[in-house]
Length: 312
Picture 1: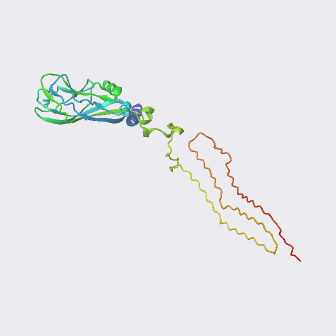
Picture 2: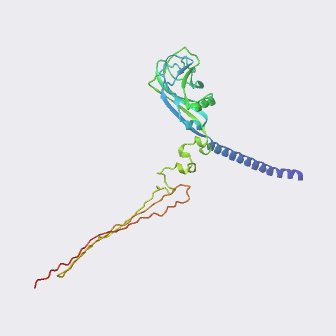
Picture 3: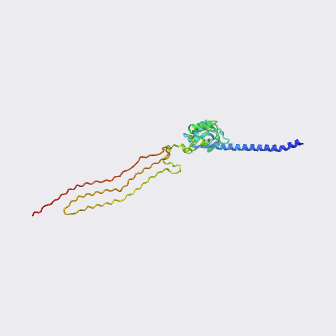
């Protein structure tokens, strides 16, 4: 009886321990799932590449591959293309006349989108008989890696319509309509991209060398780099007067007056501005100006005494 009582008293503790272990396991699993979801959001970024060009204008019996784009293929920016790591989805907008791919038509499930001759497997259904219709058709492409390699080779993709049962239908791809291709790519976060894959506004300031800075750049405080030099000078008026006087019954006078004056001031200022430079200091030699005022005057005087004796 004693042993049975002990056995019954241990069962609730064991159940409690099991519940605690299960609770911890569930909590750990939820935390791991939350971390994985957060990491997935942080790592999986997407961008959409878009190109719109005129349609080819093709009209005739459908062949294995009929041109969707004309002389100008779908063209995308080089930086966005090179940043693309994988193609997640594709959407194409196109206009067809007499497509015969509407439900129940004989070419339903026969037309697919081709890019650079690669079959995406995206069905171009929904174009009825004897009607001009514009549709936007999204899908996940087959051969996505091959399409991406072709795209990154020249940043272009030529669009075609691939017919699984050629020569059984007339098709027109009117040139007075445009076709648009949208490619959704998975890209790396900006801090994981190579420098040549970053856009200009993503580059860090320390990636720019000082000799590449332009004159209109701003200092770290936000204001423009400027320097001002001012100098003022004042001078007075010159007031000179000269008086020569003489007298006597028998006199001789030789006077020469010379007046020299200057009211000008010397002005000389030099400014130096240094910013974002490797030069440690700037030295200037002494710069001075001289001002001298002088005058010369020459006069020649001859003196004679004329005296006559009176006759007695």
